[in-house]
Length: 296
Image (tube, rainbow, N blue to C red; front, side, top):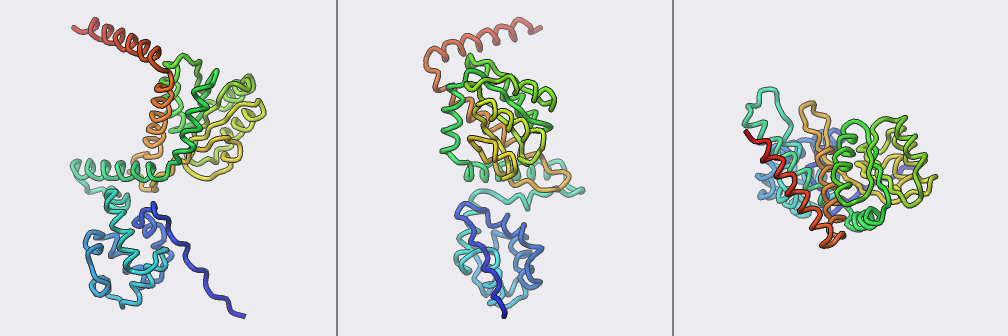
C-alpha cells in the first residue's frame, strides 16, 4: 500500500524564509534547488518578480516554482513573496554574510555588521517576553546568584557576574566543572542559579543544573537550542541565533547572550528604585574621579 509523502511543515510568521531556504537547499529536488539558488543569490530581485519571471530566471517551469514554495513551507507563490519581503525588512540574511578569503577589510566589516544585526533581530523576534519577565522576577528576589558556563558561555557568565553585584546581591561565577559542583552543593533554596549554554548539551553544565534543582534553587537557563539542559531549568530563555559553521563567522551566540544579560540586569536595576539609582550614581562618580586622577 503506497503512502503519500509528508507535507512540509508551514513556516512560522517570525521565521526568516532566507534561512529556511539555506537550511533546506541541499534536500530539495534538483529543479527546486535552482529556484532556491536564484532566491539566495538575489532576493531583492525575486521579491518584485512575477512567477513567470522567477521561472524564466531560474530556467524552470512555473509549476516548479510553486512546488519550491510549498517545499519550504509556504502556501503558494504570493505567500512566499510576503515571507521574503518580511525577511528582507529584517536585513540581509546570514547567508549573504559568509566571508570569502578574498574579501577586503571593508567587505569583511560590511558582512560582519550585516550578519550580527540580522541575527540579533532574529533573537529579538524569538525571545519569549513572558520567560524574560519570570527570570527578572526570580533574580530580583534572589538572596544570592551564581552564574555557570564554559568556553564562550563562560565569558557571558563572567560579564553577568560583573553586573549583578551592583544591585547589592552576592554573585559568583564558575567556569570550572569541579568548582561548579562544589559551589552548587552549598547553595540554599533562596539562591538562584543561571546556567548558560548555546548547545544546552554540555554534560557538566547539565549536571550542575541538576544538582542545583536538588538543592531547591531556581534555575534559569540561557540557552541556544532545545538540549538536555532544558529538563533541569525552571525558566528557559531560548536565545536562538543564526549560527553557521563558516570558519570566519563571528560568535553571534555570545553576542546575543550578552545582550540578554543586559536585558536582565537592566530590568532588575529598574526594580531597585531611587535608592539604587543614588548608589549607582555615586559609584559612577567615584569611577570618573579615578579615571581623571590617573590622567597624565
